[in-house]
Amino acid sequence: MPLQKKREIADAIAKSIKDLDQTLILYGLAGSELVAAGERYGLAVASEVFADRTYQPDGSLTPRSHHNALIHDPKQAVEQVKQMVLKGTVCAIDGTLIPLVADTVCIHSDHPQAVHFAKRLNEALWNEGLAVKPIRERC
Image: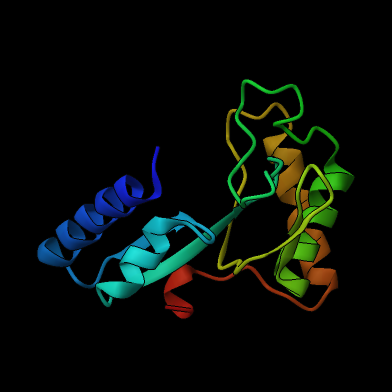
């Protein structure tokens, strides 16, 4: 999809949220047009990163149709989240370091190891001196 079309759709979503309820928090993929649109419309935004997914060099998620789209190893997921939260970067599948903001971490509930990932991530972040908090405390 061309960037201009993505921008138009993102603007329509952000405008609709602003018109509906300006106190809502707009969640979007970190670095996405949706997050940028929310910021343009003065909304509180939460840049979401993914513990159990790999990233493309452009910052998008690797499509699930690709064999390497999901992270199956809890240790790898923990290391990826620590890098995103502590350093503000993620390593794409080609090795490119992508800058990003990590306000919230998504673990897909349909992932076979979702509960295990969540426990390991919470423990790892706690060990780094970070606590999981409600997003309203940040926005």
